[in-house]
Image (cartoon, rainbow, N blue to C red; front, side):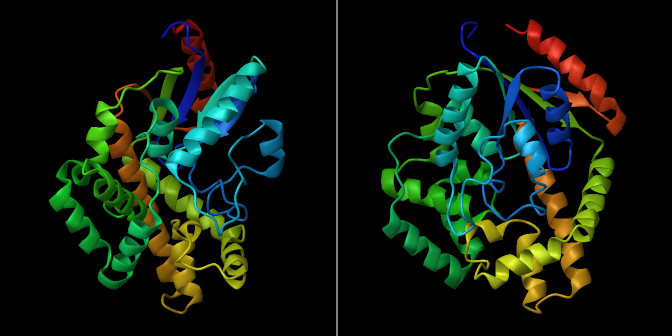
Length: 311
């Protein structure tokens, strides 16, 4: 492990300040940033994904942002390839790769790898997509619980992409994604240093609510209108993102404006809770307590000091 290249991973729940902290650290050390956000990969999804401004993307040499059209699909396996290629380029420049994002499966794929040799099967995938539309997500999840309870116990039951992928792998291999992942021989590529910021839950939820209000003020509705008018709807992976899917319902007159905003806040808080649950299971994470934004400067210096001493 000591001879492996170091990478810094800043992760945790949405709105915890990961990006702000990453920029503070990047200002202090030669580095480039790899986004581990499953939605910032899509062009045009800016406000709702809290994507850094263009000037910041350039200043901090971001990777894995704005690399796909919103009509395309993107998986953890894709990120494993793109993220590792980005890290390789950054290391060649003798810079520190800073991985920033809250998509836990993407980070796991990047650091530990995913199941080898289980490729996407369009026939099975199409069958499951049809069942999703006809019978709903609960039907698929109940099916997963019967055939693969180990994965069902760990997976995000509200994420159709995760449920479908788990069923697809089981149908192809007869094995659980989780057991296959645990049993595969993993080749360690990096010496990762995991950091996550731990806010008191009510403070984090207040920050989430305030961020949603600011998104609306900054033109989030117009952003979704533009995407919707271009032909994008809830059938696309990109538009299944929290915030976008609720505003689509508003634009289709299925929700009032206030109902949509309240639902965005509620679903974002729920998403943050699921993220916290996921990352609490990652034993390599160093959780740093934070109560105010003005603590971030000291935290960035503290992180770099510990990181330099880490073997």
